[in-house]
Length: 172
Picture 1 (cartoon, one colour):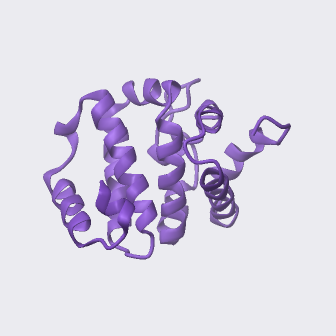
Picture 2 (picture 1 turned 90 degrees about the horizontal axis):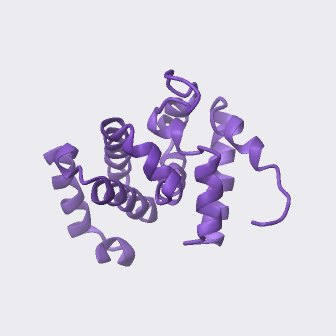
């Protein structure tokens, strides 16, 4: 993580059309899986604003939403949504991630709920469901905004946890 690498190339690849962004999400998911709970990695991804296109947030330099093809990428597969959930959970759990989220609480919670709801529809990525629940928990507990989470999302989370056979998911 400390060695020279083209980290700056990752953000343009994340916002690129689906064939490129799917590969980039898969690469980042692999890195996150290899270095779980690595604070340096989380800070690097947050510093690159890698989470902003997934949440539809504006770039720090202006009021316009981050231009990306991320919604098309996330619509393609549960693999892309799962990788996005892991990336989001990693990057949002940082000082910079939470600072940005604090300025856009409603948008962040809505996007995190949408991603989680879509992940709950498929059963092939229980680790991603865990990451999406963790991300929503990070946002709502740090920003004290549980009231923004729709009741149907809470009900879906509880139902998914109750029927899950994945140990990490059930532990939540």
